[in-house]
Structure formats: C-alpha cells, structure tokens
Length: 317
Image 1 (tube, rainbow, N blue to C red):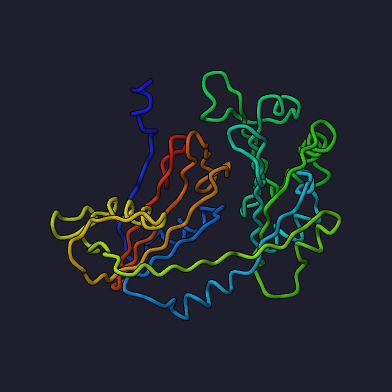
Image 2 (image 1 turned 180 degrees about the vertical axis):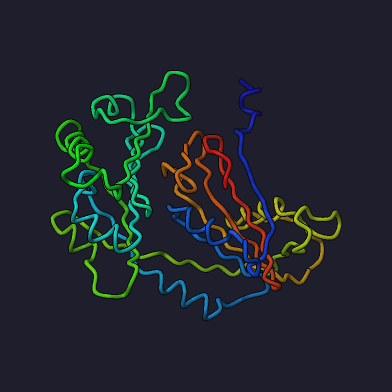
C-alpha cells in the first residue's frame, strides 16, 4: 500500500526552443490544434498594470454557449454543415461528462465528430470504431470518429443513412454541450442562439481575474539556455514548475535576491475530460487529466514551448 502511494503517475513534459521570426516556427500549429481549453494564465514579471493591448485582446474574446440536452444527431444535418462547418470553425464539447466513465462527444473545427463511449453504448449504436488506447486488454471503451464534411456523409449516401439511424433511432445520445463558433468572414451569420432556439441555450462570458504579486522573485531565464545553467539561469522544466506553483499561490523560495526578468509567459489549460489533446490524439484522465501547454516569450522574439500531458496521453506533437 505504501509503495503504491509513493509511486507518482507517469507524466510527460516536452520542451522546445524556437523563434517567432523563423519561417518554420510551429507555434501557430501547436495553438490551433489544441482545440479545447478552459483557462489561459498570463504571467508578466516587472509589470503592475495589465498592458492596454493585452486588455483589448482579452475584452475581444467574445462569448461561448452552453446548449442543454442537445441530441448528437443535430450535428449530422445538411443545414448544420452548410451554416457552420463550411463557413467557419465550429467547436463543441460535451459538458460535465467524465472521459473515464460517461459518454463524451466533441465536434472538432476540422469537421470531425468524436464519440468516446462505453462498451454498452458502442454495441447498441452499431457504428464502426476502435478500442480506446487506455481501456486495457478487454476493451471497455471505444472511440468512434465521423467526418461530417466527407462526401460520403451526403444526405443521400448509405453511410449517412446508417449513422443517422444509429444516432437517431438505435441509440440516441443527448448531452449538454459547450459550443463556440468562429466565422471565416464578418458578413451576417446565423447565431448559435437562433440556430438552437428550440433548446435551452445560455450565453457565457469569459471570467477574467487579475492578481498582482508584490516582492515576487522571478526566475532568471536565457533564451539560448533551454536546459539552464546551474547558478546562472533556470531550465524550461524548472520554470514550468515555478509557473504552476505561482498560479496556485504557492510561495517558491528559489532565489535570494531580485533579478530583472525579460520574459513573459502564457499557459493554456485544456479540459481534463476532452476526448482529444492535440489534433485527434486520444486523451484520457487516469488520475489528473493533465493536458496543457505554455509559451515563455523573450524580448528578442525567441520562445520556449512546453507541452505537458498525463498518463493516458500520447506524446505531444
């Protein structure tokens, strides 16, 4: 028993160094393919007031929506495809569903519907899927992926008819969904509220909290020293640990005297119960559901990217 308590769950932290000025920098791809996030933390050393540009960006985040008891088959209609999938980036994630126990669903901005379901639901649906990577030798959980934008999903196609029958008659699924939509242009577009008017829809605003930590000694970081240098600078993994500590208001006595910090950080936390982490990489919970990344950005436009996942995850891209 004691041995089990002393054993920490496996976790993985991937760190890389690059520059926003490099043509092959992958920062945009890493951000755009980590689809489901619930918290963004910004750390600005040597700064007592939020810069106006940062404040304006936060104020421009807009809204997201909670749609209650929405049938999954609503995502199959041609009208949904025409209004949302073809005209922007649509995000939907089932709300208050546990990835290790409940049926979970998500619509990716790529137009794919991901269903992570238990064995009973999978067998009742009768759709083709694959065992979860984390369900053990005897599969108790399955992943079903449906490309809603594929030509085989046209309303007169056999595949569409089978999927519709499975999710409408054979095993209807209705869940609460968090929904967001980013249209490709600024022309007049249908709103989430009007489109789902026959369901209960709640508009949600992002909560913004600001905290000034006085007399906080920040790590010394050098953009060209990803692994740090003893007595001189901290490594990427050390600053990642430090950022996690201060975000939880834990006092870290790492440094004896003040140092001028020429960096900022952005940490993005993914939903613990999302069926995917990056792209379509399966995500599981196990004991924590870790699923996050951060950028440490230097004044010369170099950056460190840190990606962290837990036991039931593949290696970040």
